[in-house]
Image (cartoon, rainbow, N blue to C red; front, side, top):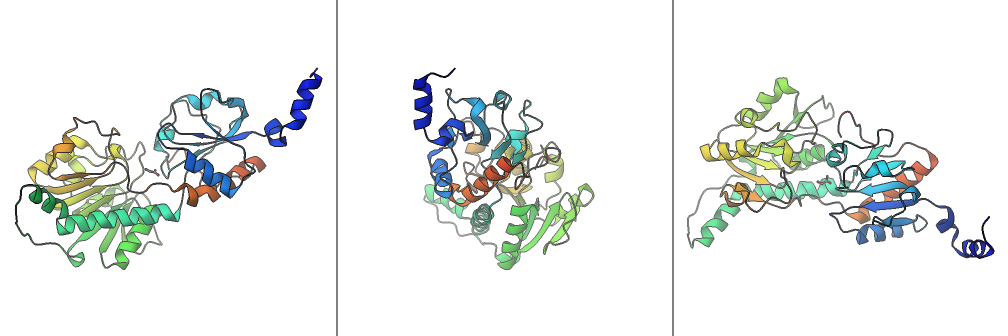
Length: 329
Ligand code: GLV
């Protein structure tokens, strides 16, 4: 029997606090304030919690997450949806204790495609005009002009033709770049020439002066860029990896840069992040490093799809942008 005092307190509490399950933000590596603010602004009726040791896990049915501690989801008895805070779900799917019956969603946002395009364009132009090379010469007080490559001079191969890859290919083509792509399945709507599957990989690689990797990380793509595949590139090719670090065999890249077969690499993602201070990439003069910043989710632009999915989950409807656990994306 509840005491008079308990009944009185529960009558005074807002209804939601008594009965609602909450949306939980669980992200040890990303700040959470801007996410709370963006979701509140989109729909102030959704109860939101930020994960801490005191979180009552039985009151959570929807988790918005990035880099969660593995095994944690087993402890949520009422979980109905796990939503990645980013476009990628590889970290989530690698959790050996991921609940099998809970749908996983990812972010699909035109803003992510747009900022990825802008980043890739800046890397392409940086390499074509030798800006990193001239920066190195500046530090040595050296004046050494060198010829540049123009948009008309280069062929760009996009690896991975999902939502982001297709957008990047199209925007680059509109700027006059010659673009072709490689995908694991046919892409009938692509404006770029598409090479499909392992049979056509060599033909794709052979014409890629710039190789832009936008593949998802799955068991099939892990270590896919290795000595064997990278040697299919034309001599002097340049690698841009803005997808996931584990797609590239890092020692093989160093070997190919040192032999001169690959001229330079712009890398935003790594097997281990943050990149360890002693990693040989830091000192390599042919490698440009950025700290996984190619395209960062903007909480404001994605809040509507999170709110939409929250209410779909409540109604028992299928969520937007659900990923296939089999395919891995
Ligand atoms: C970033 O890497 C993302 O997956 O959104």
